Length: 427
Ligand code: PMP
Image: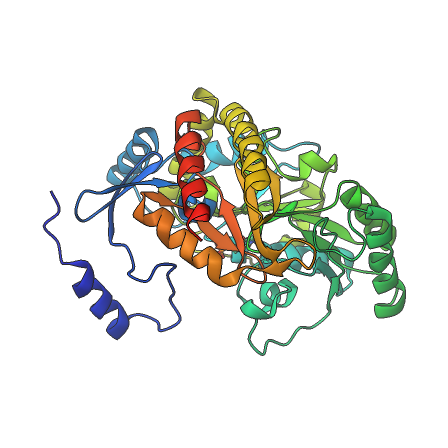
């Protein structure tokens, strides 16, 4: 049993000593003291089904024993910085990770976060091409440092950052976008940005396959191959941000970009890569990787032995427990049943996503697509009271984000659906 400080005591300290910018979803924040696979437990021992997995950071399940054992064993043996000495934990994971990527993508740079990974990817694209302009999609999220905040295209996540050389293309959003799912029309904007906003030469293009923070928006089918072609013709590199969609979450494939049939020049990842420990990576070709030999490039902890030992364990668990297959099977089932809920509840405007990266958008008027911002908060609170944690996001904050650990079962999906059904009925 838990004998630590009460939720009220922690909340008081958090208010006094931690950043005032921290937020939570519930009227009374939960005090989560333990995690086990797809479940979280509060200080009273109450169990919650976790359908958000710490914003898709946990892929194998909370505190998966294999991952915990790997980290613990490494912590007892050696914890050090990544550079200076040889250590097999780092090279073993780099080799295993490279084997998961297609084409010539096989050189790995480790980082501590997704933001760092995207900063590095943008830096490499600029160095390699000698150009400066970066194109990203509106409604995207790529990080919170200067370059990535520039590439991020939602006012909610921007301060008065100097947005040097970043252009935001019209979002190929099948539900809210001006051209529906018409990829060819959307991609004209990329071409126009290149022609009217740059010298005609760009450094690169960065995009998620499914926008996570943006509210599980699947980029229109056919868009990425066309956009990649335009960008490459203008000398640019194509960067796939797999921070949320990567690591088997989309089910049908290991990476989100694979669902679009493209091969990027640079792939960035974080979150699921370490099942919750601070780890990120950039994977590129050996030719592009060469640009970082011009000076010293250094990251003290990125890919340290402790995190890479954990990363290797994650890849092994994904394989051993066939979690990609599970994400595909259970995710498809869950999506079908969510479509069923849409028929019953007028408030569900859209159901979308792939595998275990699903979104349910709530609107008070299906024609006008008026965001149901208040309603979603009530429903989330209600679901929490019934033992289910789900995320929300999207520009208007009206989209349920369903991104559970990949060990989520069909029974969990049924329970989730029942609880969501009751919560929506009560609105
Ligand atoms: N890219 C995407 C797609 C993300 O969702 C996030 C985090 N929400 C990031 C990058 C930044 O990752 P981090 O918070 O680890 O810096």
